[in-house]
Length: 476
Image (cartoon, rainbow, N blue to C red; front, top):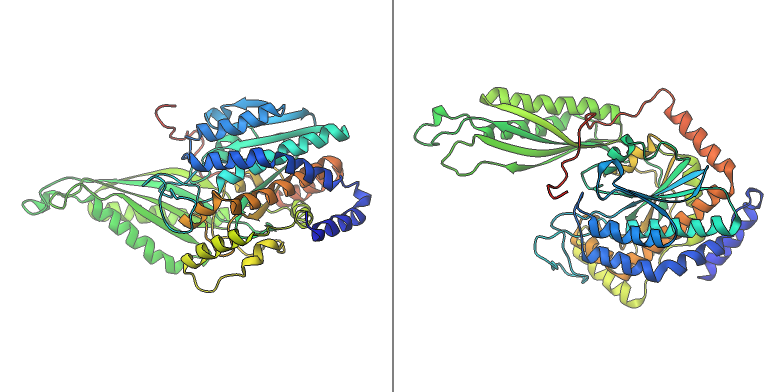
C-alpha cells in the first residue's frame, strides 16, 4: 500500500469515527489475501470467453470459490442455467453485490498490444466481464469474513448475472423476485478511470424486425415479387430521417441480419436487429413507438408483412446519492492503479492504436475522479435493478485512459495485469462499502429513504413483454 493511501485511510477514520467505520486496513488485507486465486480465475474466464446464456465454465468457477468460502449457492435462478446467487449469513440487512461474466462476439484477442485474434471469429472479453465477476466475488468473501470477525448481523449475497450484453439477464431475475428482499445493492463496471457513478446511463430497447414478402425472378418476373429487403431499406431510411427529430441524447443503431439469398431472387424474407436508447425510460417508450411506425411504413409501402419481437430492454439507472458518496469515499481509501514500466509501455502502445485524437494522461488511472455526472451513452441492466432496490455503482480503471470498451484493445488489457489491477480497485472499494453498510445501519436507512423519494409516483416496467422468456440455447 502506498503512503498516500495510508494517509487517506487515517483521515477517513477521523472523519467517520462517529459512524463506527470498520477497520479499513483489515478489509483491504482480506481482499489482498484473495488476490492470487482470483487473478487466476479472471485469467481463466478471459481464456475461455462464453457468450450470454452459455457462461457455464465462468459461472462454475465463481460458484466453486464462493461455495468453498462457505456461501450457500442457489442455481438456475429465474430458470436461467447460468444465473445464481451465493449468500452467507441471515436476516437483515441484505447487501447484494452484482457480478457479470459474459463475453462479446467476435472480439477474440491475444494479450498483446496489436490486433491479433486468439481464435478467429471467437468471442472475447472486450467489456472486461472476466474481471467484473471475480472482483465482486472477492468483495463478497472479504465482507463475509468481516461479518464473522465483528459478529455483525445480516446477509451478504453475490448475484451471478448472465447475459448483460444484450440479453437483460437481470430483468428475468428481478421478475423471479431475486432482488425483492435486498436492503441495498452495489455494482461496478470496468472502465478507463476510477470514480463513483452519478448518471442515468441509457435505457434501451432491442428488437428483431422480420419482414416477409414474395419471391420471384428478379429479372424475369419482378412484378410478381414483393421484396422484404425493400421493406428493410425503407424502414432504416425512415429511422435515419427520424434522427433529426429526436432528443440529442437518443441513440439508434441497427444491423441487417438477413438481406436475402441471391441478387436474382426477389427476397421473400429480410430482417434487422435494432437498438434505441435514451436516458429516460418514458421518453424511450415514445421513441420506440415511432420506430415501430417506421417498420409498419416499410411493410405498407412494399406490400409485405412485418413481425417485431422485442429481444431485450434495459431501464435507465436511478442514482442514489447516499451510495454514491459511500463508494466515492471508499475509492479514495483504496486509491487508483500504478503501472510498472512494462505495463506503461504496453498501455501506451494500445492507446496509440486507438487513433482517437488527444488522449488523457496515462497516469489518470492512478487518480480518483469526482463522481461521474456526465451522461454515459451506453446501457446496463444494472439500471433495472436500481428501479427495485437502492443501488450504488462505480467504475474502476481496468483499461488505460482513452481505451474504449468493446474493442480489441480493451480485450487485450482485460487479460493482463493492467486489467487485474483495476479489478483489485473495484474489489477493495466494494468490500469496504459493503462492510460499512453492515457496520452502520443508519446508512442503509438513508439509502432506502433516498430511493423511496426518487421512486415516488413511479413504477418499474420493463419494455420486455411480461411472460416473454429468453431464447436459451437448445442444449439447455
